[in-house]
Amino acid sequence: MSSSACLAVVLAAGEGTRMRSALPKVMHPVAGLPMLDHVLSTARAAGADRLSVVIGAGADLVRAHLARTAPDAEIHVQAERLGTAHAVLAARDALLKPADHVLVLYGDTPLVRPETVRALRERLDDGADLVVLGFEAADPTGYGRLVTEGERLVRIVEEKDADAPTRAIRLANSGIMGIRGRHLPDLLEAIGNANAKGEYYLTDAVEVAVGRGLATAVVTGPEADFVGINDRAQLAAVEALFQARARAAALAGGATLVAPETVFFSHDTRLGRDVTVEPNVVFGPGVAVRDGAQIRAFSHLEGATVEAGAIIGPYARLRPGAAIGPEAHIGNFVEVKNAVVGPGAKINHLSYVGDASVGAKSNIGAGTITCNYDGVFKHTTTIGSGVFVGSHTTLVAPVTLGDGAFTAAGSVITDDVPADAMAFGRARQAVKDGAGKAKRDALLARKAGR
Ligand code: UD1
Ligand code: MG
Image 1 (cartoon, helix red, strand yellow):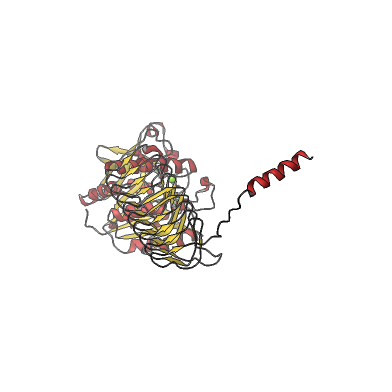
Image 2 (image 1 turned 90 degrees about the vertical axis):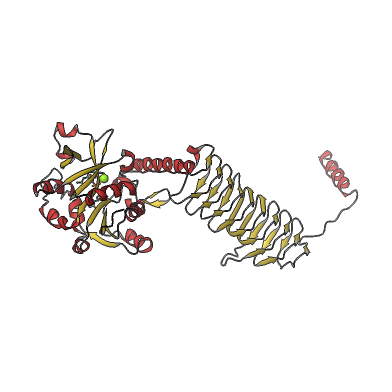
């Protein structure tokens, strides 16, 4: 990888009006992560050691988000939206500190791969002064066209400013540009706004650079990596492209996906080898599944770890903090939240286990509920190892069941149960001989008398 100092400037001051949303465009998630974060992580992975984000006036949500997720990023405000070159100039303070490479990325283009940006940086290392990432567009409508002479990029012409022969060019501008840092201030200074939109176009930096005798170049990549998001349809298209990539990566990594097109991944899903994922499974953020585990059909996992050989589902829900031990089984219509389930433990049917720990090899009967919430506070249920919780047990937390304890089916357990003890928390059954028949006869007599 290039060892040159690198500043990435991410333009995120888009109004996003075509999203028709209360949420700023760059905050819309792709695979569970705001598109802006995808771009920032690509910039980091491509070796950027400083990040600058240009946001619009009043984009407090973006600012607060960055403070949490990228506290090292410098934030600049572009008060008026006067074009992409004007947006880069909003990061003037960051440009004053010297960087060998300055990358400009767009916050609404989240599928760009780090390796493509690295290839761009290699061209800068090899002597180019300005490099643009481009792609052969199936339909280039709306994109800037890259006008080349042999290897050399001569200029970029925006759709609105292009004549018919230029519009016929299919080599499109992705918007991503790398510039040798020392040339940038001078290039930006020289850009005017004499164009159809009256904006300061960053793309004009190419023509200025050529006029100064600087070396320009194009690095190309596949179109799918450069799809920009301006509306919800494009957001859905980018999500689909991301999912296709994630499925391919899971298969390449040694997981079996029975019906890949029905499995939905998060940006950070990790699957071990020989994991099997059945149809219609959804992974929310923060899930890791270790080797040989099975995720059966129609399960939903989020913020959970599943250890080797465990079986989840069908129809299971793992919520944040679920840590399922090796060889454990979580069955149908079981919800687990913030709970550690020990090795070989089984929660097979119709249960809610929240704010709890379940020891190794314990068996939780059908319909068991941990009553973890009193309306104000959350309380913990601690279940030892080798415990047998009878069907339809209600565990009123805080409560502890010692190792090897039993609870009788249908019990409401409000007090701790010592190790190896058996707890009954239900009314004793009464049986009255003949009372059933007597009741029925009385009812039938009443019906006949009507
Ligand atoms: C831009 C390129 C075009 C390229 C296309 C790729 C220019 C002039 N044109 O066109 O060649 O093919 O992207 O998708 O650069 N932004 C600001 N402040 C501004 C203007 C824009 O921050 O004043 C940000 C936007 O939020 C967006 C990015 O810059 O993230 C691109 O702006 P946009 O208006 O979408 O440019 P395009 O017309 O798509
Ligand atoms: Mg755009």
